[in-house]
Length: 468
Image (cartoon, rainbow, N blue to C red; front, top):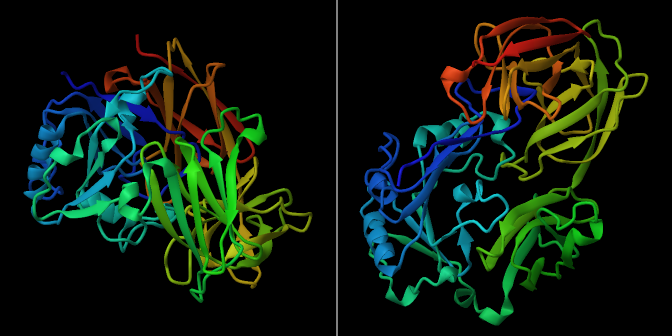
């Protein structure tokens, strides 16, 4: 089969470019045409990736890349061949995860048009070491601090098997040299009739003591009918005196798991699919909530009202991420520019302040989340409306600072809306280069660059011309 390259564009309007090499595209293809070996892959990884049974591949994550996913459909003989190749990997000891759920192809599901995506029997995931280090390693930007990978060592090459599509595991032989993680129900004392099972252990972040009466809330993702909140929640349960929660018989679908307790900062534990993974255990730490307050001023030191203050990229006093807590926002500042945010985890966070007319210039400030009042500065911002004359089909518009992307500069990308335009707000004053191209599309279809000058409290309208 011929591999077809496709792109998924993510909304980037307002992204602060913390890494000059960051990109917001997931790339991938279908079929088993060989992919070339990457220098940062462990030796032998390409042999695993390029099995004949491969049906698709894709590379993520957005804003960095380097995590390669390969998807396969095959019988026990094909899997045994894959495991022999896995065991031959050098430089990192590979890992095998066994699950008794049923999985479908992520990449082929993109073009399924609402139909059931093709099934897959196993996946292989391998990182380019340099990309992982840049995103999550010792010297990584805090932009990825919301991820549970932040600060953790490079994951090993990992092959995950799903037996729920009919794969006969009794015919599979696992060679020596592979770490095996068995996540099947029977490996943890459960029976198939128990259905999907979630186990959670909850402790205090600082003391490590078990937390009684922490509430686990499980919601559908997405809701069957997002407008009907009664369909959103699946179930909830409280932890016992040992901080333990066990739930059986959960529906087999995409779910969001959240944990909360009075006096503590709620957090999302995971986004999981119980159709694929019938058993999962989580060890969770909750942080007590603190109040953060302060004042927002402009370039002249005058208070700015009606500005939202946002905290993100939380790190605990241990230096670990408070994942997946994305952000906390205060109500808009009052007439004196003052704000208060309740229930913030102890540690540190990045602070931003913004409105339609004002923006924090640069990367914001990393400050302790303490009771000490803080002062944040904002500058007047501009806006931009972009259209593409002659555009047919989806188009993606890109905005970058004149002279190229630099750490702390503003840039963004966005799809044209149904009205044929896209709008960028909260743009720091300065000169920017704008262009567009079809999505999916090629570099040859890229429009000519247009340079614009963004001024405080002004809106610039830009018309690009599609390449015939």
